[in-house]
Image (cartoon, rainbow, N blue to C red; front, top):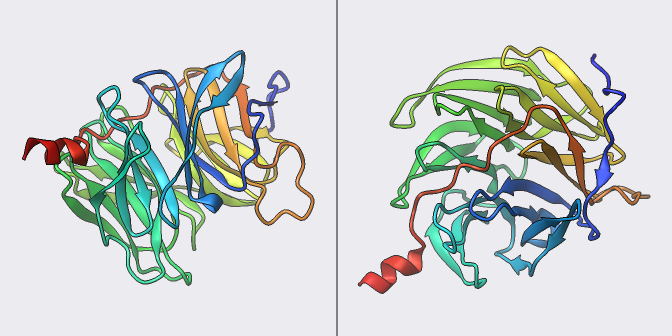
Length: 299
């Protein structure tokens, strides 16, 4: 297994600590960062200043929170997976429904992300654990389409820049990164395994400008970089045992972490971490829908 590059320096870039920070997203509208704390059902936004992420006010959203994705227009807020569906969170903190009842029973929405055509893809996770959940896409008009069934814990998700390939992680039971071909209408085909992730649970996923895959490995204290063919290119060892997800903010690899379940968390557990890398990334693909209140105001 590839080991850490000696020149890598992992820094704590947040003064705040979170119970289970997840799903960091680089906002191309203002250069800021969005993320969630799953354990406290809160959505967070922050800005970069002096090498640190300075948080703004948090918004408590629903009972269980999943991934956020920015809308396309400045000031238009965010789409956020919550409970059994997806809501809009305005910059003023007002929460409005976009899609409801995608999950059922005790299942709830989890990780997701945008694609180049402006759809928001988000999957659910099962409670108790069984392969009966799904991966959905939300069109800009709010229509939801089930794209994949038989999912247990829908986690990392990233599209290449063409939108023709989806990389995806259903953490259980196979602990693998998979790939799909994506048709223009969103249909998935040619499902294949990129690689199995050993030594921990693969969680959040990001793709860099060379098309390589960065994945946070929960309980391994590592972030790993893989090729699309599944070759392990690099392992970055972390001071936090439970990294949850990653985002590339230009050449800054931002890593969310969790302190949940750790009997003796360190200063790094629950912090946002950052490490400079050679190949950067691009801002998160936005959801190209309109805020629900914009539709209401037009009536």
